[in-house]
Image (cartoon, rainbow, N blue to C red; front, side, top):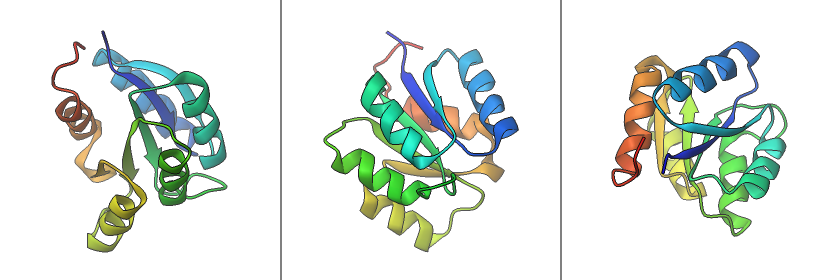
Length: 124
């Protein structure tokens, strides 16, 4: 069983890169979203294991999208993938229900490792 992902990122080329590279890592990208509102709908429709949300997708920001996904009774882990992560952003994300935060500067490999760390028992 592979880890099912929803990728929410407002920048088209970054979203495509995440979908492509995480797919090459064996993750199953079941849906994409451009906005935080779409991320909530895609999570509701697709029951993913993980939602990767950019910090500033259009509409809801990543932290508010996380809060709504978690508050909507949905159970996926949410990883905030932000341009930079500092103590304030990480604290706000954790308060909203994010499992973790990964800075874009750390790269997609770091994001893949974080997803795997959250689901070590799942086959990729």
